[in-house]
Length: 212
Image (cartoon, rainbow, N blue to C red; front, side, top):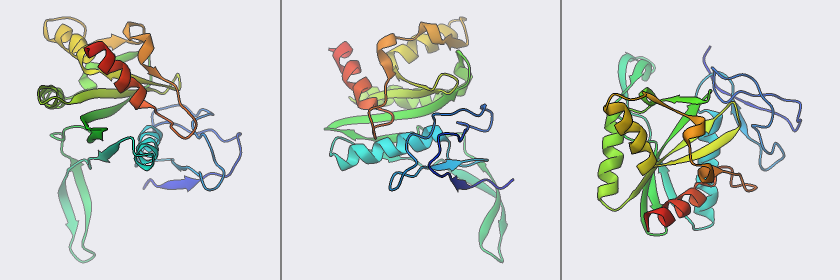
C-alpha cells in the first residue's frame, strides 16, 4: 500500500501497532481528545515511537527547556516523474548521522531513536558511522545517547553513550553482537509524564550525575 495516516476517534477499544512488524496493542495512543488528537500511522511513514518523541520535543520547546531538531533522512532519487515533477522511486542514504540534534539549556545534545520488538537488541541496528558521530560529538563536549522503544513492553529506555560503548566494544572484541533487556540500567527506563510522553531530560540529568 501507499501508507498514510488515519485519525482515530476517542475510543480505548482501538488497537494500534508501533511499527509494521509489531503486533496490535492498546495504550499506544495516549489522548485522542481534541486538541490532542494523535495521527496514527497505519502502513508506513512516521512510527508511533517517532511521533511520541516529536511531540515531546514540541512540549520541551514550548516550555523553554530544550530545542531539538529532527534531522531528515537523506534519500537518493532513482526515478523521477518529470511530467509531475516528483520522485517515484528512491532509497534511503545509509550515511545519515543521527535522528535528532539540538541543545538542552546550553548543552549540545544528539540522539538516535530505535525500536526493539524483543528482549534482545541487535547492535546491527546501529551503524558504525552513527557510533563514530556520537563519539566525536562527545569529544566536543556534547551528550549523545539512544532512545530505545521496547514496543512489546511499552517502555522507553535512555541508553547513555558510555553504556552503548560497553556493548559496542564487547562486540568489537569478539563478544555478543547484541545486548539483552536485563543488562540495562534500571534507573534509565523513562516514565511518561502527561503530555511529556518520552521524558528524556530525566535521562540526561541522571547521565550528567554519573559523569560528575
